Length: 554
Image (cartoon, rainbow, N blue to C red; front, side, top):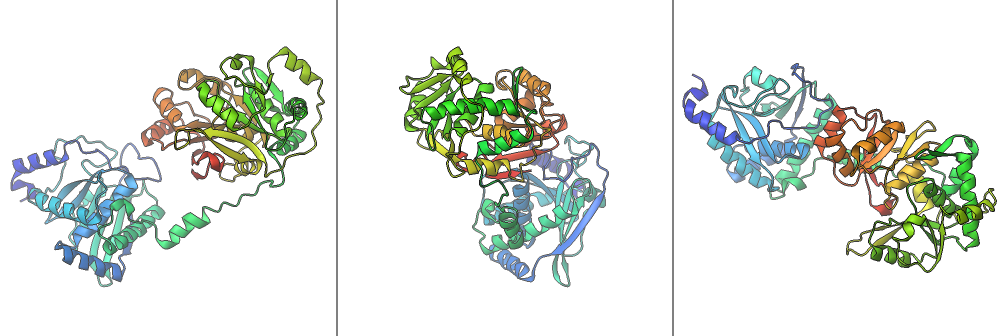
């Protein structure tokens, strides 16, 4: 007699109610994409709970008046929740010769002791409806994963094991059994999805989480640590070694000048159909720098820059730095009050602009030079093209970016030359080469443009200006990226999400895609990866004050 034959109609109704609206898949991090059909390639890792932990678990179970499997399953559920970031979990488990599918809602970040109580209640409620299989339930099925649940927990002090056919289709099965040495843990897993190293780390994380949980059962499951001491040291210290080998004695423009001398005829920057070589960019920016120097621009002096996305943008930035000053990029679409505050707060006395931008800028009492005017062209032609003597050093200001500020009042973040050099030569991002074509697609009043412009020009790469807006013209944006044969680019997470919906093959063929700004939607990432992934995907995070990025995920 099968377990469900006792009350078949009632059991089917019970499970259909329990599983209504449940997620079809528990999405754990995998080492490889899920194949379209399971091949049932299995792996196994055997470990054990330490003697002190085993004793503490037994003590906790006795104190809460629950069987020992309850804190174990509660800990495993918390681990799965932390790994998958899913609040709605369905975990299979064995019970008196049958199988249960225990669905848990962990969205309220419960205390560990509360998860134990829920496990106990769910288990008691479900045992009378135990099944030998869930195949008969009207649940959508596929060939890529098991129906109803893909993870099982088996507590088998008497070596009781569920049917092989059920276990074999699970992505992961944790069995806890008694051995002469104590409680033994066995992780069986789908070897098509997981590497042995990942499962071994998971076993270590399970023990660490349980140790913290039994010590303080009233802690919320989100606050329970996963990493043992050795792994925590590796992540925080060994992997987070902030030492970067970069030219500490140079300014941004000095490193650029070395590159220009090395590859003078290589293309440096292209906007629309206009290109300057490294020599031309160096000489043009020298001419403007000489004029800025004559206007009194020097160390710590901020120069406003409000131009279209064009060659003048890069010439202006370089010239300001060569004169010894620092640039403040202004977006003319911002409210006039904000722009006026920025100009006043930064004590800007010189402004470089395009004529089309002037009417949208607030009144300015300093010196204004319209870079796209005939008068400016004639003035700059009279300036020398050779380099200027040094007045600023690596510890001087390179640029200021105004963020919204926590109070709503714009707040200027001051960035030094050395910070930009450290970013451009960071080994985690240092994938630029002279053969690269780097997109300049970011608004220059935001710091990702630092990564684009100086990441390219300090390594001899070709900077490709992208003028289309991904928000307003996503297809034109992608066309410009593809026509420009871009190999490296940055996009905000919002742009990634938009393009994943509208042009998911947008990043096909890229050598490196860097994204940042906020947390990325895994579904959007999957869409991009399925339609033509870049060779390298970097998710960066960092406040403006840290020079674009302070942490990366590769």
